[in-house]
Image 1: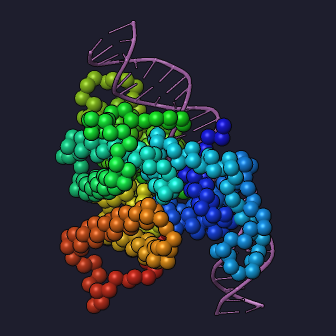
Image 2: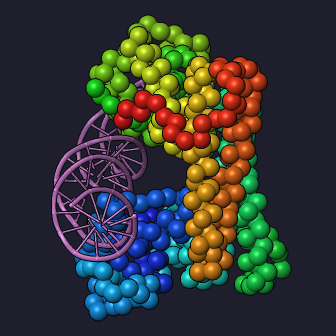
Image 3: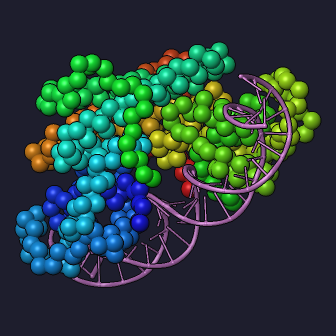
Amino acid sequence: MSKRTGVLELAVLGLLQESPLHGYELRKRLSAVLGSLRAFSYGSLYPCLKQLLRAGLIAEDAGNLDPTSAGPGKRSRIVYKLTADGKEHLQELLAETGPAAWEDDGFGVRFAFFARTDAATRLRILEGRRSRLEERVEGFRGSLTRTRERLDSYTLQLQQHGLESVEREVRWLSELIDDERRREPAPVPSPQPQTSTTSNDTGDNR
Amino acid sequence: MSKRTGVLELAVLGLLQESPLHGYELRKRLSAVLGSLRAFSYGSLYPCLKQLLRAGLIAEDAGNLDPTSAGPGKRSRIVYKLTADGKEHLQELLAETGPAAWEDDGFGVRFAFFARTDAATRLRILEGRRSRLEERVEGFRGSLTRTRERLDSYTLQLQQHGLESVEREVRWLSELIDDERRREPAPVPSPQPQTSTTSNDTGDNR
DNA sequence: GTTAGCATGTAAGGAGTTACATGATTTT
DNA sequence: AAAATCATGTAACTCCTTACATGCTAAC
């Protein structure tokens, strides 16, 4: 029930897990954490908060004096915090390793909260994202060599730049994966060090 | 009237300008040209075609036998072509240099059809995009140095990677701008070679 | 003869934006 | 006292996706 895929919802829950916040502040942190990935407007944030409230995932944190607002109570600010249900739901979302976690936005937000994700899931998501991008590179090269002659130089340059961007991210991911592996040596030290290249996936309930 | 901003509309008009096509083929070319930028489903393509038809920007190209379908008429395919109005509208869209042409998607699609855009507009769009990205880098560095201490290493790495991606695109744009300038030496050889860093813009009617 | 690919569509709805409306509080 | 910033919200709308429905043709 309430199968929201929304990136915003995840980001809000992720931020609230760190400390209770009110809407206005939340939006600023959102921009800070997500950087150039995405920007949300109040027009989507406030309705989202209401919806999370109705769903019982967050609650008003009455009488809260968070350290960030050192000044005297400025105005009727509504501070929200995660409920037990909210924490649980967040963990479920962060544990997803299916399509939602590979997609550009979904991956970005999950990565931003990797510190609260367990090591095994981190590795799965990183590898899922990488193989997704590798597929993209493949299909790309294919169509490039197939239609190379018919494209003008601008279109070609665009493709080239896009391809290099993806390849760059793949290298970045590979470094991160190596780091993760170094940190947690080997979850399953099976004799064959081959990573299964086909059929990844788990519980992708969408 | 009919102020559609849609990326899809622009892409369709841009492709049809090159040659008449039917929906199914159109979608394949869309994926080929836009590459990893974006993918559209039939569920958005066909309604878009209908709408363009109603608006009189495209028309059915009855009795057309395009060279790409060498085989005998496979089935009732509806081939569309640009009308005079459509060509005009497309040129207007491609001539925009305001926000619509800076945004990620808007820029990408316009760039893909740069071959049909006049040199002066190309330069304006490239410069607009670049200064947009430079602003992004600025705000970015600012918030990074301000909140550096409070972010965990994952969030930091994400920011770092995002920042480098943007910087990379800026370098790419700079090369393209140089190329353009070399091709068309100087539209206005004024004594001061300074590019106006403030208040660019023109007719951004949205 | 059944799967795979070509080809066109529609209905419902999700996710978020823009523009607007309101008011308190701090700064200039 | 005006302007900027903090703070919360709503209504209408845009653009696109998913899932479905249909049928024809080619290959296996």
